[in-house]
Each structure stands twice: as C-alpha cells, then as structure tokens.
Amino acid sequence: MNQADLLPAVLDRLAAATGEVALFSECELAEWPAAALARLKAEGLLVKGPPADTLTCPGCEEDCTMPVEIVTTTSGALRAFVVCDKRDDVARVAIARDLLEQWTCSPERVADVLARLLGTRRSSGDSTALRWDVGVLKGTQNSAHVVLGIERTLQLNIAGHCLLVADVLELGEKGLILERRALLRCVDAPVAAAGDALTRLSAACARHIAGQYPAPFAMRVMFNNAQRGANMTHTILRLPAVLRERARSRSAHYLDIQQGLFTHPVQIGLRAVGWPATEVATLNAARIAGKTEAEIRELVAKLEVARKEAA
Image (cartoon, rainbow, N blue to C red; front, side):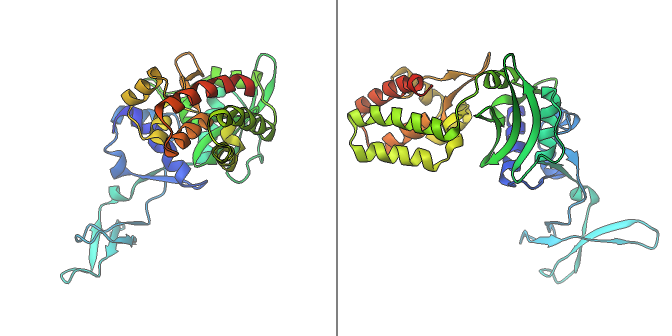
C-alpha cells in the first residue's frame, strides 16, 4: 500500500462500518508506509483502541476466528491465549500481546478533524443517525451548515451540495489537506431543494435523450437517477470513483473524453476536477443499452448542454 491509498482505505473502512467504529489491527498497519501512518495518527484520525477480543487463531491452518482469553499469572503478568479445539497436542495457543493492539477511526473523529481544518465549531447534540454536524461555514455571501453523512461513502452535505470526503480531503507530506475553497464555493452558490433540482435535471436530460432514444429509455434514465437519491444530483465524483463506476483505466477514460465518448470534467478546485454522478450513470446506462459510439457522442454533447439548463 502506498501513501495515496492510506486515507481512502480508512474512509472506505469507516463507510463500510455504517456509523460504527472502524478497527485496524497493528499487524495490518505494520504494512502501511510508516511516515504517512504517523501523520494520520498525529492528525487524530487514527487513535489507539482497546485490545482486540477476537482474532484469527495462529495455532493451525484452519484460520478460525476465536475469542481471546486474558489471565493474570501468579507473578502478576498478563497472558493472552485462545482455546484451540483443532489440535491434539495443546489446548491453549499463546497470543503475543502486540497482536491484540488495534487502532480505531469513527465518524465523530472525522467530523472533529474536519471542523478543525475548517475552523468551525461543532454543535453538541446535533448528530443524528448517520449524520454528524461539522459546524457552520461562512462564505463571502452566505453561511451554511456542514454535515458529514454516510450513504455508501462518506459525504459532506453543504448548502444543497453533496461532496465526497475523499474528493476534498487528502493526506499530504505535512498532514491532512482540506479543499476549503471547494466548500466555500458551495456555501456561496446554494442550490434549490434537492427534489426540485432533480426534477429540473431529469427533465433536461429527458428532453435531450428523448430526441435520439425511445421514450422508454429516457424514462429508465430518469427513474434510475431518482431511485439513486436526490443527493446524487449534486454529487461530483473524482477520477478514482469514476474509474470504478466505469470499469475503465485512467488512460482509456481520458481517451474516451478525447474521442467525445465521455463528458469533460468540471473544475472543483485549483487542482481538482470531477464528473457529475448523474452523467456517469447516464452514460453507463447508454453503454448497457448497447448504444453505438455515434449515439453516445451525441448523448455526451447533449449532457454537457444539459448542465447549463439544469443550473
């Protein structure tokens, strides 16, 4: 694992825990780049957790997950072991204490880190199920609440916009870097209610798609976009997420853009770009429907025009 993979790995593990604490064993972290790992710990994103109460038993090749027993010897020392029922020679398999060490990350901790980087003050008691208050961010013209949420991924909801945490937070050589300007642009450019925006975007896409494709196909695109939730309307995906959605390599993705087979990116920061999630879903649907490259090129052009109509 390289440095660029560390923060996404932590965020993905946390999203998969759906609001619970994500756990990382000391053995797992030993394979991570030491300097980058130290920065994550120094930033407070990873903190030392309680000893593991279960682990994979090293006593045989069965790889059983067993509860850990800890006893105090007559000399006062602590001994950890698991009871193995797969061996005839020994019942107790000794466990080294360092194998029980683990580190944790929680949504509360991520919200604390984000609030510190933004300079906001979190409101006590404002966190609800799968949503954690980060505080009020003041822009040039407006102010807006920043809320951390989980919907398959960690997201920041702000002024009607939805940004992936992995797209605005990165681990640099000196610590965590937050794309603050991207959030401030969201604050100063609030969007209408998600349902209204979804209706406008779906209508714009439907008008263009229906000009080339049969009505059932346009209706399917509208229905699928609505089913994936109003948040998707304003979700911007960074390149790694787009490549996963498309199952394409980086070089193939940019070749598609050059050939007019995929939309151009939108600027979300000084050095950051992304693609609207709705466009990714719509173009994937066209591929699945077996549309020709000529048809997809026309769809790409119409989707880029639809961006302006949906504004």
